[in-house]
Image (cartoon, rainbow, N blue to C red):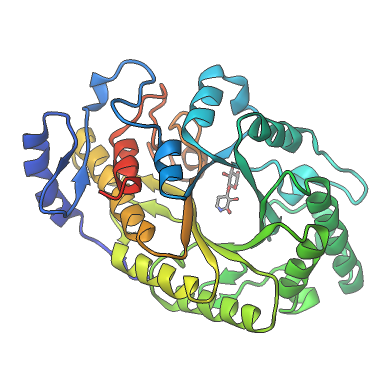
Length: 365
Ligand code: XIL
């Protein structure tokens, strides 16, 4: 990934638009789209004139998803916005190994079940996340011998994928197996060798032959050594007949250093040419390091969401985008990187300029 730092240039592009737009959509010479209304002009959940994101995505044949927690669903507005705006639900934590399978013979399916049934009730698809990942792993996994671990991986995948067969349409099978341009040193690599990646995909395919199986990683969004390594890994897996069907580009961004949209599009193109579906899988855009005013920060954020998605949506292999949450009220960013405003809706569920930027990108404008 080659981060492109062009906030200054964006600022120059955005300023005349802000001045001219008066809170309306504005577009000049097809460059950057920014969108209003000003954050304080909206008082309740109302995406403004125009169709919900879900409909805009469906008109384009795309999935539009959000990472979701069962606690969130207890809030009426959270549930309402989720069902209205998104057609794909991704459990943020509930299907990770530790929460769902904390001990060899203990399974905790309740929270994931609640998410899956919410999705079914609202005609949303589900992408399960994440079967094999070095993080949020229960302690017992680290103490297994190679043979025990191989068996545990098979049982874990069979147990989770098998339970949701027919109700969860896609899975992140292997998450973050790369550490820079190298394979990440995890208990899986250390004990099972690099074949663990292919083994995990075969196990998921055996558990649900209809599921769409993804490799998911971060820092591989644009072009660069890690993205090249990811491409080589996926090309090798495909050449070996491993059932990997898609790739997720996480896209956790900081506003002052985001990947060049044209490079992301080129990456989507080459991955698509391997026969893979390509998704943006966990997008959020952190603002807190920007030194400009809050309205300007929000416009820059909108422009980043818009530019990246518009560039990807033109590529044939691209089939959707998932945001890592949807309201600034609930985001992993606050705990992991400090209080921020990384998502499409503010803490009161009012759509932000980023929301409008995403919708315009989905509408191909
Ligand atoms: C994050 C969750 O959002 C947090 O709640 C949790 O504490 C840690 O994991 N990449 C991934 C996601 O693939 O699973 C991570 O989710 C964010 C980074």
